[in-house]
Amino acid sequence: GDSVTQMEGPVTLSEEAFLTINCTYTATGYPSLFWYVQYPGEGLQLLLKATKADDKGSNKGFEATYRKETTSFHLEKGSVQVSDSAVYFCARNQAGTALIFGKGTTLSVSS
Amino acid sequence: KAGVTQTPRYLIKTRGQQVTLSCSPISGHRSVSWYQQTPGQGLQFLFEYFSETQRNKGNFPGRFSGRQFSNSRSEMNVSTLELGDSALYLCASSLETGKRDTEAFFGQGTRLTVV
Image (cartoon, rainbow over all chains, first blue to last red; front, side):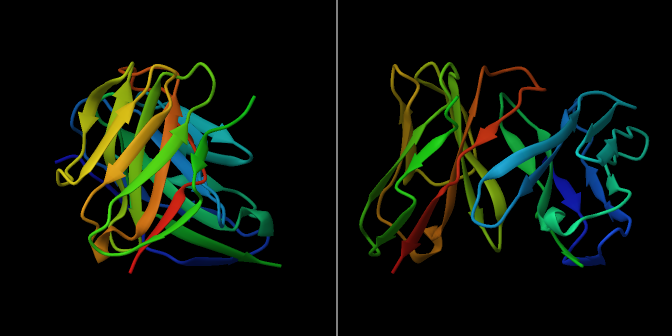
């Protein structure tokens, strides 16, 4: 069935370091792809999305490009901040508004 | 504009009991989806309701059920609780259903502990 695979965490970085979190998806149909972020004690917030091949989603310095040839949607940020510490989820849509999520990657940024 | 509201935030139940969780979507949103989040399985889709009709269902046993009211508020019910049902239950609302780029807005969740 459809699935999303993202790199295992935790990822520990120093402030201003470069961040990459890898995400690959099953290519059934033409999914939209999403990155959600979950801060401690809160629900998920949409970080960015891309709806077709070669689309680049971006928000708050984070970027991800929809790569159909490699079925990937890697999340990147050039310079992370302590406030970026959270759990990041890669997701693809399935039917209706149903989302299939990766297992999540915990990011910890220290000053 | 108020966000997605889930009540209660925390709940402790005993094995074998049943529980009802509530979700009020963003005003004007007609689609409500439910997800279960556990450390082992991650986030898993339970079901989606749109205009009071279940549109999609995930791979969960029949003990998990839900409904949606005419004002789009939704409830989910879990009967005969098992220890493994302990999880964070998240509700997400969307303006519509069927469009693959529709954004889902999540509530803070209900933390259910089964003892």
